[in-house]
Length: 100
Image (spheres, rainbow, N blue to C red):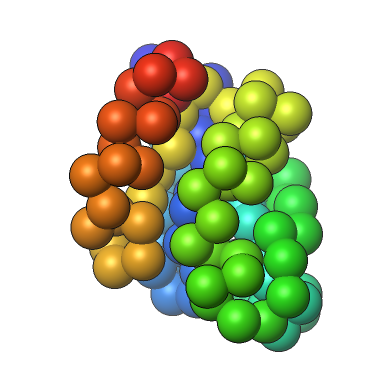
């Protein structure tokens, strides 16, 4: 079982994942753009990190930044949620290459 998971998503998707991780007693790492700094998933997570400006293309779709935060936070896995990077095979390969 993982001890810490980064959620590479936002909003209700991230909240549901965080609630499940809490039930499993697994620490959660949230990412957020400037537009989402006060979003519920940010305060619900064990830790949270700013990923970038409001535009999704400059924040939640920045695979390299997300991988960097995962390593920095000590996350052992990344849950992509759905949409965004969950639909990107290159991101999945990058996670695997990074041991996540």
